[in-house]
Length: 507
Ligand code: NAD
Image (cartoon, rainbow, N blue to C red):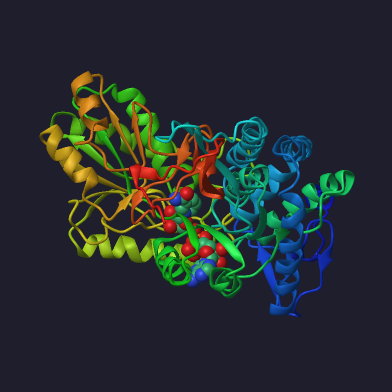
């Protein structure tokens, strides 16, 4: 495990940092073990309330200074962070794969996303544009500008242990905010490694202590941030259950929330689809990352004319899937994150059977050599109806549901008829179907694709979803606006003071 050494991960790692300094924290530790082989990797200090307050105080002080740095200068820091991440890409990719369980290729892909968002944020640092408007009053000018918010609390999920942090923090940093990151308790070492990497850049550039902070812990530490008035924006990625709990707490103090929650993503496969590319999109979408992406394909809504043909192709493709150590080349499916996730997968299979689902590719756990961690499961496929309770629910595991349809209107209604609204797609070569799917009468999701699957996204677009997915948008396009406060300015350059709407107020 040389990569751990190179990333400065010790058996007994510190987990609280204000940038370049590391704090002591409580005596309690999180034990991080790998779902790949079940071995313990390292322990990490949990943040206690005292250290939490030190972190927030430091962040508040840093903000007063950091907000005065010109945005392109802040962008220069992000550029250097991108370079440092580039140097560490292989090691960080391996750590992501080992601590979280996704394939090495996907681990590297996740680090690539970090590099891409750094590049994006550097450009953005010169493009934090506001609009100018024409005033209705003579001799007046109106415009709007964006100012930094303050402290951004980042709460992240286990399945994208490094990318989600970078989507938030690189954009927040160029916007002039300071960040406090609480990674998932299931992957704390990924957080420690990122902090080690950026601390070098901070030291070299004399960045104020407290611009990028790390606190390690679980729900409790997340709750400290959501309850804390000093944290201007909570950007939380995780389950809908977590998002509902957070939005109540942050809403009660009228704080800002950016929520990126669960999905229940479907692909419509039309009778006019190129079935070969639909097969690749469905297979990667459903089985990739062992079904542990928010954009994982959970449902295939297939036209009755191609249903049997496509099902046969899919079942044959599932037989080719290689399950095993995700760090080895050629492996398609790694483990689930932990044994609790395996139990949820097994429970969902049982529930599906009870509710009338018929498995055409059976599920189950894998045992024996190479599967000692107890976290490896078989990707499976069931024929269902959309209204089954289990189908309405996001099970974070590789269970794919097949649903048959007759008309395109029916397929779109089925696709929309779930509580979540993250990612969706249609495979069709028929322009009318594709345009209907993308129209206001089409998909109700934050992401709607044509002839590519639901899984994954490029950083250039705004990422997020509707309904129980939480409504937040992160990453590209104008998602940066969530990290700033908007101010409208009116300037009078005359010696008169005309009132708006022609009102006269004379004494
Ligand atoms: P989770 O909800 O169990 O935990 C996510 C984070 O929230 C963790 O850091 C956890 O400690 C923290 N947390 C939990 N309850 C909290 C509370 N009440 N207050 C404050 N913090 C709290 O999710 P998970 O199992 O780590 O991740 C899987 C889920 O995340 C799936 O539902 C998946 O779809 C979703 N996800 C969504 C996106 C997206 O962009 N929409 C991206 C990745 C994952």
